[in-house]
Image (cartoon, rainbow, N blue to C red; front, side, top):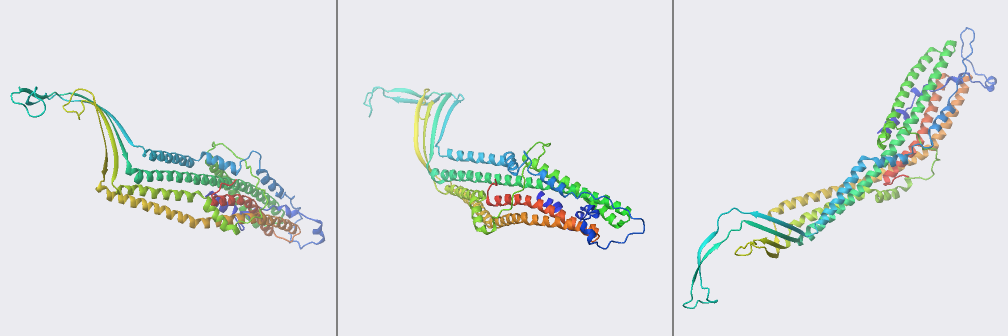
Length: 512
């Protein structure tokens, strides 16, 4: 993550690294009347004629404060809320999740359509090959005799028994099947499962929105941190270069050693590298933020937030149990997993519907020329119908149905385990976020006190040096502490925004 990388590379710098070269040598020639009243022992000076020290350079404190203040709260600048809004509006992951929700809604409609009886209509024309008329010999009939035994002496007629061949056959039929048992055993559970999947997908969309919002806020604060860090690094480089120039003059005057000069030259070179890295990191952070918001490549931003709010007296950690309950109620991940598990259970129930025999009601109508149910066949349109009920079961399907049901049950159990694991982790997540929020609020006041103390220490150290009672190393150490205090004070303001965003995400809320 850029946030942790930046903290390690810039704001986490400690000790006597390049920061020890950030001091300014103006204090070398800074003298007060009190110095004359209480002179300190002066270091030995070579026998050469005395040379006046160089003119003092500006400390840069006011300039530094103005630079930082000028970058914050600029009218029309970008805020974390605006960055989060634009990122969520253009997020490809959110777009994908919305399409997943549309697909889930379509699956609900498809499952609902299974309630409709299956109605099919068919029109058919058939041309038969000519195989000749069928003859079955002659039929002896008594045309004048009535039903029953033929009276003696009744005339008999020999009638040829043949069936004409109809080569062109036409039919229109309609069939209706009502799957009565499926309505209760399969259709209803499948429809319920589809609705639960849709609800789970909707909750997943909320999760994606929270993630996109939080990611954009983190990127925004990383960018602010990197941008201010580049300013601090540039200011540190300018101070180090000024220190180097002043020290060169002191070496030429014979009042400073070349060893001190070489040390400051080394620190200046390192400060140059850190300044370049800080600018590169600022550009990278801005590009990542720009990518999240899908702005044009040449889009530049100004910092719209002031980061000047006073520390809050409200504590988060003492309300941990309440915060955990809020998270469990509000975080959509719980509802998404719960709905997904219920959907799997319903799918398994629908699958087990295959164990029972299937009952279908059916009806059909046929209008055909010739109609196959009419004997003998005649070349004319005739209508017939049929209706009935059918009870069936395919025994060979039962083992496969059982295996599929067990597989779905296992996936439902896995989702239940995921939900349990999420519940276990929520308390830790909330506690970490609450502690970070508390620490950020405390850091606002502690770093401010530390900055004031470092400023006073640096001022006193310069006075002592001007009176010959402090060494260059001690002044550089004071400058290092002052610069680090500035880093800490600037970082504390940004850390509060990060901590609040993290706490809001842990609670399942969008921070506004």
